[in-house]
Structure formats: C-alpha cells, structure tokens
Length: 270
Image (tube, rainbow, N blue to C red):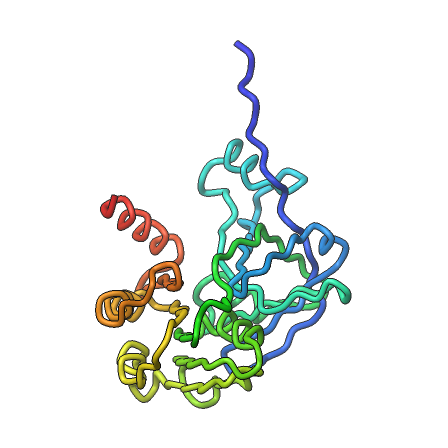
C-alpha cells in the first residue's frame, strides 16, 4: 500500500531576538527581526496575534519547521507548545516585530522564556490572526481588559482617529504596572489595581453610558469577560457585530487546559 501523503502547512516564521526591554516589573518587551521577517504577513487588526512556538527540549524537529508536518509525524508529547501573543507593533521598514510578555516568575513557558531572552535567540511563530480594529461606524469605543489584553488595547488606542471618544478600563497588579499609553483620541483611561481589589466588570458597569453606537473590545480573564458579555449584550444592547469579547485565560488553568475547556464550551453551545 502506498504511503499516505503527509500534510504540509505554512512553515513557521523564524525570527531572532534583536533586543529586550523591561517595561514594568512584570512586562517584558521583545523586539524580533532578522531574515525571516520577510515571511511575516501583517494584517490590519489591532488585536493581531500569533502563535509563539516553543520547542520541546531534546526533540529533533524537521526543517522547515512545519507544525502540520510535526503533528503528522511526531507523538503528541513532542509537539511544540503554543502560546498566543498580540503583535504590539510592526515596522516593516526597520524589519522589527514587537511583543509584550507578562512575566510572573518561573512558572509557565512564555514568561520565563522572555525573561531569559537575549539578542540572537530564536523566535518561532505562526500567524497572524485577528478579528478586531476600531471602526468608523462607532460613535465611541469601549476597551476593557487586563495585562493579557493590554498590548491590543494600547495598539487600538494608537489607531483611533483624533478626537474620537473612547473609554479604556485596564486591570494590572499595582501602580508600578501602569504604562504610558499614546492616543490622539479623546480617551479616558482608568487603571485598576488587582492588589487593591480592582474589578474590571464592576468598573465597566459603573461607567456613565454614552449615547450613540459603541464598539467594544473586552478581553482577558474569563470570569469578568463572561460577566461583561451578559451585561453588554443583554443590558446595554451592544450590537454583536461591534463586540469583540473573549477569555484569553482562566484563573487556575494553564493554556492547554483552558483551550480544552473553551472547546468543550463551544461544543455544548452548538
């Protein structure tokens, strides 16, 4: 019997770390580039995200690094670990791609990697995907999230036209984790601190509700995302097509477990 043809997808984009910067005690910026930057196909979304691929130590992977090929030929425990990260910025002229990583110690994969990253280190990624960018059809914009959504919120604020009303609610650990955000919009930015009991859902519900059509971006920990989904759709009648809302993570779950839980929830909803 002839061997079945192997599936092949688009090989991973292979970059090199150019430099790193500690933005706050727990936020690390990685600027990557190199010859592989020509393979990165940018999109127009301000929540553009990639899958950063982390090799399992000791495994010999095929070249080019093709995830579909790897999954077809290697056992599951040898598949690369994947973590989703928002593109914080892309400068095609300079050949630089920017990501901001949250680092909370030695647990996990991506945070410790970013903390130890140095110029020349390899960075493998696939993508980008994305679904959200501020649109002209909205009279005002609502942006809410925690550290995991901060890169997308920051990119969205930068993309807003001058004078457009916007309200941003951002949860971080404490005052030391706040960042200077740049925007030409008429934006009111509220920082919440987890250390003093800050709560995104409560803060959003307490906002004075503006008149007109709102476009909303709500991402971060699944608990407040779920609460705000109900509030925005049921109580505020936000148009579904103008609502970008998703749980990036859940307390007590690693990335693999959270992906499985989300997949199970989607299956139950069908």
